[in-house]
Length: 191
Ligand SMILES: [Ca+2]
Image 1 (cartoon, rainbow, N blue to C red):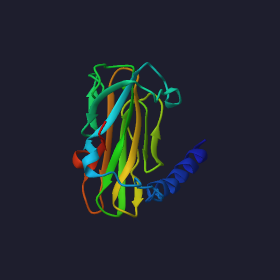
Image 2 (tube, rainbow, N blue to C red):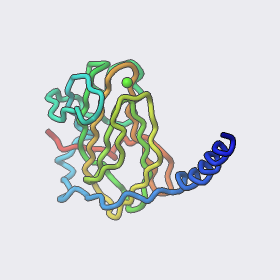
Image 3 (spheres, rainbow, N blue to C red):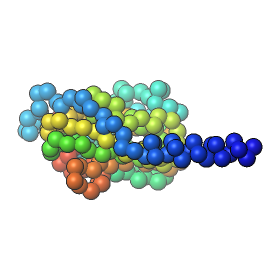
């Protein structure tokens, strides 16, 4: 019994540094092609809502018909209040999309905090998925390699079943500080 415990501990020590080591960056993100003209864009990300209670992302309805006010930031610590720009506090599915602006090439670090389920895609690549019902849960640091600056398509599926709710997408630009994705970094096509 004791020996097994020690072995487990040693294995843990061996695995931990590997797990904590810098992950291989996600590559191959495709910029919007063509890049949308500035006069075709509006601030924030577009969002459509579908109202139903689900337990996991595989049940998500992406064809939500209720158009919400655009999301001007991705720092939503909602507690038990209303979900994003909807008027509901529970049973909400949000299909969020638009473009994220990478100002320069380099490796950007993303982190996603979710309650409940979330999937984040950028430039056609899956950046993060945590698709079940859970309390606030922060992803590991996710490095993403960008080879060309510009606008990239971003898509987020997010749902809140009940109780408290959180959706936060944080990023760290090369040489920068970790901040919420917000401001002129996110835009969407004018309706
Ligand atoms: Ca919840």
